[in-house]
Image 1: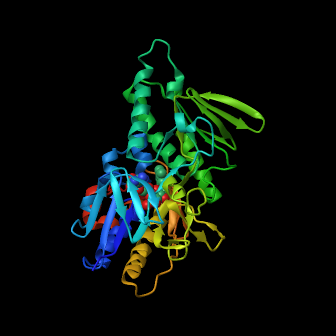
Image 2: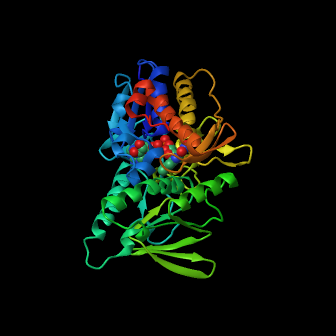
Image 3: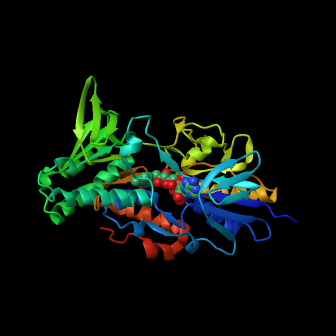
Length: 404
Ligand code: FAD
C-alpha cells in the first residue's frame, strides 16, 4: 500500500515544531515525512537583531536540523523551494521535485519595502544568518575604515534604522551596547557616531502600551539613539536616505541603512496562486488554505484573525510555534482519515521587546514588565523556544544563561 507523503517546507519555528510533533504522532507505516529547508541548520529569527549588531555570534543563533529531528522518521532535504504546484501536488526545488499528499507551508517572511525606491538595492535587512553576518561585518568595517582615510567621512559612522517596530527597537537596543565597544576598539569618538531611527507612524512600537513605549524610547535615547517619529523614508540611495515630514524633505548621509519596518509572507505563496494579503493566506480554523484541504499554512505565511479586535494577529514566533502544534495534530488526522481536525486558537502569553543586554519592556500574562525583570523574562522566552523544539539538551547547548 502506498504511504501518504507529507512534505513540510521550511524549518523555522512553525516547520520544526510541526515536524518534531509529527514524527512522534505518526508511525513509520502511516506516512512518509519530508522536511525541506534551504540550509542544514535552523536559525532563531527572533535572535537575529543580536547577530546583526554583533552582540551575539551568529553560531549561537543557529543549530543543526539533524540534531533535533528523528532522521529515522523524517527525510531531511536540504534544498531551496522554488515553486509550489498545488494542482499537481508538486513542489519544485532548485535541485529536484517532490510530490505530496499533504503539504505544510512554513517558509517564513520576506521584507516588505512598500515600493520605497532604493531600499531593495541599498538597505540591509535582518532576515537570516547571512544578512545578519553581512550587516555585522559591514558596520564593523565602516568603523575600521574611519581612521584610515585622510578626509574623515562621518557618514561611515551614521547608522539609520528604518522602523521603530519590534525588530527596529530590538536592533537599536543591541547597537546601544555594541557601538561603544566599536568606538573603543577602533579609536572612534562616540560623539561622532549617529544612530537614527526613522518611523513613519506617530509612535514607536505601535500597539504597545504608551508607558512602555516611553520607557523604551527614553532608554534608547540615553544610549544615543535619535528618533525621527512621524517621518517617512522616501528613498534610499547609495549615500543615505531622503526623509519627509509633512512638506519638508531632508537628506541624511549614512553608509548604513537598515530596513526593519515590515515583512510580508514568502513570495512563493503568492506565486503559487493562493489567495493572499501581502503574501499571507487567511487560513481556515484548521490552518488549511481555503479550498485546499491538503495544504496547511502556518507562521508568517499565514494570517489568523484575532477575534477580540477582528484584525489579524501580527506574525510572531509565538503564534508560529502554537500553530505548529495544531498543524501536526491536524495532519495526523488527515492522514488517518479519522478523528476531528482541531481548531487553532492563539494563546498570546505576552510579548517582550529587548532593549539590549540587560533591559527590556513588555507585557507578560497581562502584567507590564520593564528593566532587568523584563530582560530576564525575555531570556526565559528565548530558552523556552529552544526547549519546545529540542528539549533540555538544546537549552544546555544554545540557551541564554547570563540571566541578570
Ligand atoms: P521562520 O522562523 O522565519 O522560518 C522560515 C524557514 O524557512 C527558515 O528556516 C528559512 O531558511 C526557510 N526558507 C525560507 N525560504 C525558503 C525556501 N525558498 N526554500 C527552503 N527554505 C526556505 N516573534 C516573537 O514571537 N517574539 C519576538 O520576540 C520576536 N522577535 C523578533 C525579532 C526579530 C529581529 C525578527 C526579525 C523577528 C522577530 N519575531 C518575534 C518574529 C518571528 O521571528 C517570526 O514571526 C517567526 O520567525 C515566524 O516563524 P516561521 O516559522 O513562519 O518562519
